[in-house]
Every structure is written in structure tokens, then in C-alpha cells.
Image 1 (cartoon, one colour):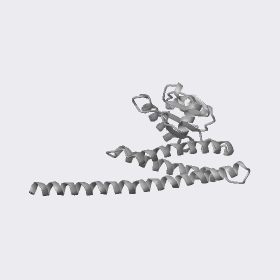
Image 2 (tube, rainbow, N blue to C red; image 1 turned 90 degrees about the vertical axis):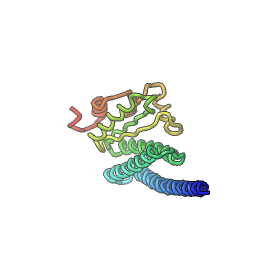
Image 3 (cartoon, one colour; image 1 turned 135 degrees about the vertical axis):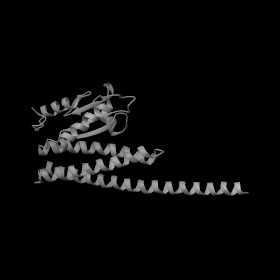
Image 4 (cartoon, helix red, strand yellow; image 1 turned 180 degrees about the horizontal axis):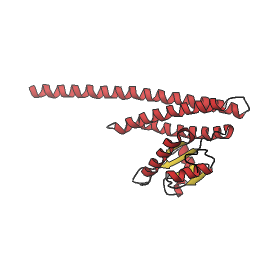
Length: 220
């Protein structure tokens, strides 16, 4: 009888723990989804004011770029929190993984915005697309990421780096087709519409400087 009681209590506790875990996941997912929706709204607003500028409205470029930098910082912070949750969770929840894909697509929107702002504001934002794959398919991708992190740390807002999983579908696949990424060895970088393979931080600095980067510390 004691064994049955203990077994029953164990099932009860287990079910309650699982219920609490599910409720927490649902709450976390709602919070992440709200953060994502906020960033989508920010992106739409920036696209709106950029379109007004493109139509000749007198909108200060510093205002546009300031809004852009604030919003993309929010995007990076929220995306990193989501990825940290997915990586630390015992089970990769399907809804979180789907939301991660949404964030990847949102990066493309910000890459497009960076190019548009560059065109109308001479922003020298230097957008860089970085196509990668998991380590076993791209042994050099981890090193490429390290070089890009150094470039970003050195140049800060003078360069905008967008990392995309080359194996994803949807909008990312359209970009991989446009730049013939699948016909090249990963990693692949796209800078000012030119395609490059693995590049060290010094090589990236050199490319950016030739494309108009005005930074005396890295451009000799």
C-alpha cells in the first residue's frame, strides 16, 4: 500500500511540474512574441520615414539613422535572448524555433533598410551579409564569426553585419540564389553587392575601406 501511495504522489508531482513547465514556456513565448512584434512595428516605422525621405520629404538623416540603430540594437538583444533560451532548453520547443526563423527574416528587412538609408543619407553603414551553416558542414564558419565579431567591435555602428543560415528556406533562400551561395564554399560574405569567401578581419577592413569606409584607425 505504501508503495502505491508513493507511486501515486510521484505521478501527481510529476504532472504538476510538467504543467508548471508548460505554463512557463507559454508565458516566455508570449513575452518573446511581444518583443518580436514590437520590433516588426519599429521596422515598419523606419521603412515609412525612409520612404518619405526617398519621396523628397525634409527628414533629418540623423533622426533616421538614430531610430535605425536603436531598433537594430533591440533586435539583437531580443534575438540573443531567444537563442539563449533555445540553446539552454532541454527540448527545442517548436514554437521558439519558428520564432527564431522569424527573427532571421527580420534581419533581411534591416539589411534592406540599411542599404536604402545608405542611398539616401550617404550613411556609410556598410551592410554585410554573412551566410553560414552548422559546424560539421562549415568548419570555417566559427572562425569567420570570430573575425566578424572583431570587425563589429572595432567599427561599431560603422558596419552592420547580418548573419543568415544558408540552409533556410523562404526569403533567405532567395538571397542564396541571388548571390549563388549554394555554388560556393561556406562561409560567404556579401559586401556592396560583391561576393567573398572566408575573409580575415584585416581583409574585411580592406574591402570596407575600398568601398568608402572613413576610419583612420583601420584604413591606411
